[in-house]
Length: 205
Image (cartoon, rainbow, N blue to C red; front, side, top):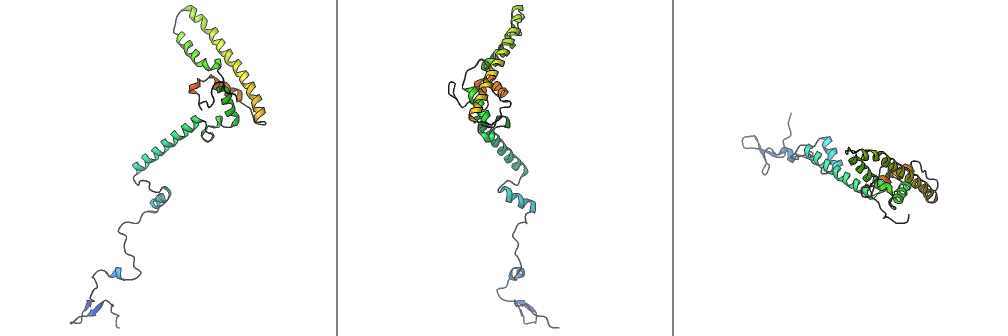
């Protein structure tokens, strides 16, 4: 049977096949249609391709990727903490969310009360505990009792006023736990309150 000769070969003087002029040896795969030339790099795995599609230019190195992830998480925590400090609703924990809780904070922050100095008084009492003077030791229990009574009385009046304000401005909203919430904020030193006060002392609420 006769075999078809390649178009790139011709018969030599001795009857052998020679390459046609202009044809490069060893380049047959590139000259044949339907044959894909190699890309010069290995094909990425499916998992790597999926990661690149999701995260874009994320580092391939695990340590670099972990460091980048920690940096992003730290920046996100800082951003959320600052938003909480400003009282932005989306960043607040569940116990501080809602217009009723915002009203309670504003009402407490708009007045100076004895409860605000409770922490200072407690610090003084702790120092006095180290004095062995009988007279000082005798005074400590009554002073502590007076401080507790002041805290309870102020908390009662704050809660009653807040319930009236909520009924006027947000009718139908629950006031459950509001008195305790406001009383605990009133015990905090003003500069350390969180979220920080957004009203000044003496402002009308």
